[in-house]
Length: 241
Image 1 (cartoon, helix red, strand yellow):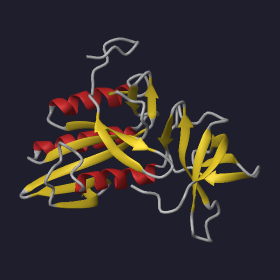
Image 2 (cartoon, rainbow, N blue to C red):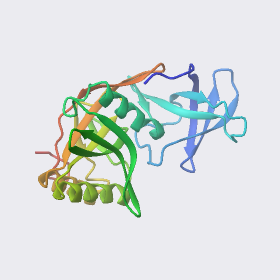
Image 3 (cartoon, rainbow, N blue to C red):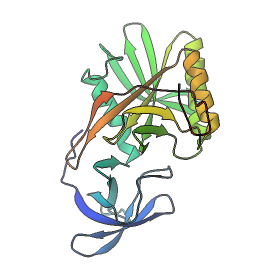
Image 4 (cartoon, helix red, strand yellow):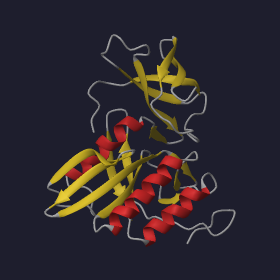
């Protein structure tokens, strides 16, 4: 996924109220920007970090700039969760997801009940593959982890995928890791033990777990490679099998 216009560099002052962040531009102006991320942004919201901003052409927006990525160590981290589905759908259509090849159609935002939707429906002949996509921005010691805050909604999505598998369809949970320092994935059991437990349970029921790392920079964000998934925490220090 290419950014349509060049991003603007700045320095993070603080992120607050979930959807706002204060930054200082390279010209020295302090501004408030929109932060399109509902998570805690643990590990990628350190004051003083370099950030990249996009600017909306909509003159009615209260905060024209959007926080797109934060520099953490040697990697940029994509924090705009509104882009995640686009990044993954593009990769599927281009045939870059090994497990999801030869897809005929991709439909976004599929309603599966009165109160719930999943991100993608892929069709391959008579097959229906339901995909729920999660943006993963938390990495510690090479481990990509999800979630970065307790997510009852995320657990609900896992159970819905398992139900669709029981009905004879395919279900996929896809973790899109928007940074380049992850070597393996595990659920963040120390943050949301119920989500971690449920993820392992639905995997045993046939839901496919995929984790792909992106190549990310101020010009583009592109799915790069799959990384191995480890689902069951064994100890309080999160040793994995």
